[in-house]
Image 1 (cartoon, rainbow, N blue to C red):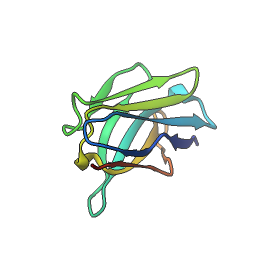
Image 2 (tube, rainbow, N blue to C red):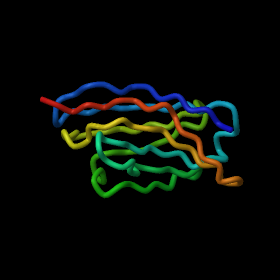
Image 3 (cartoon, helix red, strand yellow):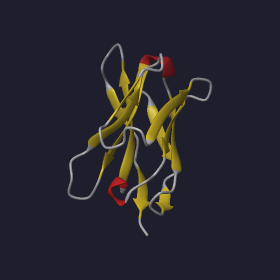
Length: 117
């Protein structure tokens, strides 16, 4: 089962950008659909973005056009570039991996993103 470690969270002002990263280890990176989810206080966890091994992506409606997910196979890392951040983007962001063969899911420990003036 893959292990996931996120990095890059922090505090920014509205309109600014931030990039968070997630590095996978312990299994074959190409076997996994990688993604980002987020959870704000008092709300359910929601999909932010997902990316397949081949690079196909899908995004949550609230982040389309502002966020971009990408993956680096050599570094076993998935990135989330977040532009034009809004206060409502404030949440803990979790890296997610789903094994294409077994459908087993793995989660990272989460990284806090805070957007506030």
